[in-house]
Length: 479
Image 1 (tube, helix red, strand yellow):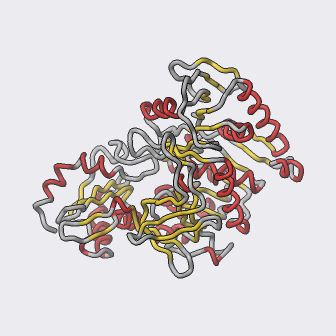
Image 2 (tube, helix red, strand yellow):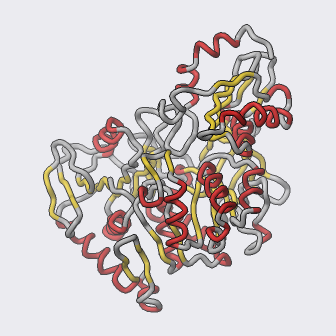
Image 3 (cartoon, one colour):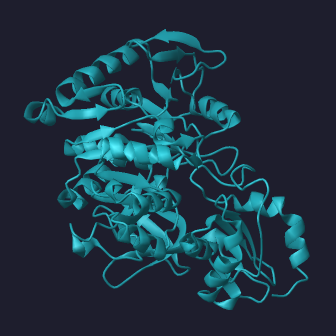
């Protein structure tokens, strides 16, 4: 950032709807806030803000001052947020007030709160950030990372994407998500680009899983971003928008998709709509990004549809005898309150490496379904293929121990009539043991019933409990 301030000081580093900070102003702002936090006695700062310039300044101030920052996901329940604050040993909070905290004077417009923490849990040496998992349980795990671990990922991404020439990034995912934190804030600043940080409501989000397509289209038209980071459901929505409004895709140079498996058909549709969509793969325990494709026009040697790309250069990936992916070279320091992490992380994901070193993901090891007839399949495969069905918003398939597979199918509004034909077409592309033999439309919807995580992944144990009666009925039904 100091180099960018000298070479291109008037260029915009951070911006939102109402304000902007150029590179010449950025470091003084970071240093001033860092000094205030140090004077206040901060050691661990919980950051509970919407996407905004203030979120970025707080995160960067902690990095500058050597303080631990703890992003608080807005999609956590009140109980999860309280558990995070108590379990992490946070002594400073920036965001809404919490019971028992005292006001702290900080920069104008920035609400701070302080409390005394008698005996905070010990952290691994060099911990700079505690990033929490997506909340598949009531007590998500805190992943402890050093600043060096975060920056090695940023540098590797910068090298992989150098020829893409991204100058404007628009954040659509919460900055409390490590992927957007690194790829949507740190990476643009490393490149001397502009990180655009509107609030989540401004780009169309209501809560964590409902998105207003019209508002998203307005944001894209206004900001003209070169790059986006998306989950598959957002890619499908963006594809629909760009098919209707092709001008929205024209500024885009990179759309990186991760968080869940992406159906090849969805990527093909997106690319046909002019979206330079590429798939990647990663996990917080390995510093976020593990592998990434490049757009074909920039580096064809790093582009292979159907894969999640080649691993980043600082990482070594191997597949064990059970097909599980192991990653060495970017391991977290450890989970909060648990022993230090091993040098090699067993990801829990199943996959393979092809002859050219591209990584292919096939599912989650713990989610493999074994039907009553002894056939194995990964539900993520079927669920990803369902992304090609225009009428289906979400599909979750259950087949473990059953003679017939059951799918919960959440249609897009007004598309219920199209489900039978599209499910039949989907089944025609699947082997018999992975087909959808019975299906129902859940009411309330999966998201409304709390059966999806914030990024749209199914909470499979909760789903099996919620639909135990339907599953029990199928134990005596053959397809």
